[in-house]
Image 1 (cartoon, rainbow, N blue to C red):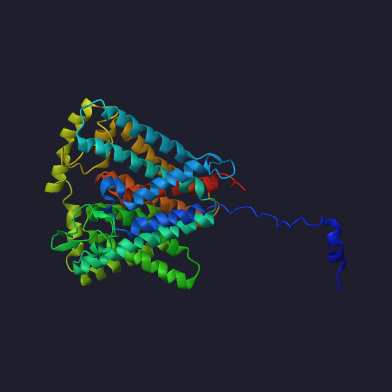
Image 2 (spheres, rainbow, N blue to C red):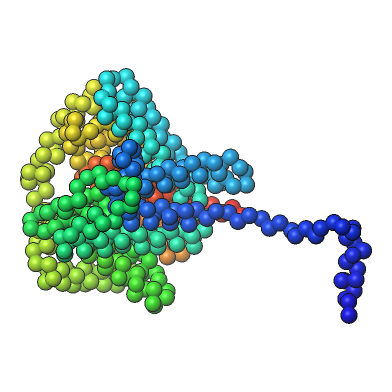
Length: 446
């Protein structure tokens, strides 16, 4: 039997005309998924393996980051696909930083440059473009708190990989990353593990133990947030294991920058925690220290000794000895510096301080851009905390603020922009702070 609707259908459809199925709207490309691919490249692939002709800017993570900027800029050409909706301070920060680097590039062309400096200046522009892509895609592309939480979890999961590799390096003395190179990449740097006071200093998939330690310190508060607020018992256990892995590997870098970063995290987080959380944290921290003393005799003492001699050891006096040389060089080119990425250690000297390095390469304008970059991350996270309506979001905002605080102090202990993993992570965290601030202070676009 034919139904009435079926019988009536031919009367409303001209003979011979094909039936057209309604076209469904295309789904938007999820920025968090794209950033996840970037995180895999950043954390899993050893940073010292690069595309040969591109040098430092040829690391796979830097190339993916540049593609993020291209994708972001192309998206802005269409009103339908543009991620730019509402206020976003991160955009202004990136523009200011980019202009300061461009100004230093132009300033560099007014002085005689060696071939190495010219190449470094050109590749420096590529690096900054990638950093901009990471921050902008994250700040404008993450459109819900659920997706931001997913990104936070994936950052922690990604950082757990170099932490695991570093633990293997520490206990075995084997540089396992030499077996992780992809075909077509060349090695930039040494595959030999550093040593200090009889301990191997692992770097995981980062380029240096200091870089690894500061990255883990910056990610640790994000790992703590995920473990504290996880509501699924099976997942909660796994997340606490990631906290233990990151926190346990951190002192194995035998780096005072890492330990100072851990101290900064505690200073920022503990005052905002309930008293029972603080007590529990102190008890767990004390028990963990005792356990590490038993399992790795001498490590805790070595790390504490590194902290206690700050200012009087040879390493500290060498760094303070850089001040006179920096002041003399900056006084010659005070506003825009000698050119971003052109202060090459093999030609000049090693400067273990990003603030001093920025003064040399990008001048006082560049130092101002660096300070604005760091201060904006802190202020956006704190602003999101004040605007949040629930305790979990307030805690997440405070954890992002703690991550930024690690960079604020850590950048004073090494030339961070010379290391790809920590720089990419901090621009990603800036983007997360911008996304969190936007989601808490503005109504999300539909």
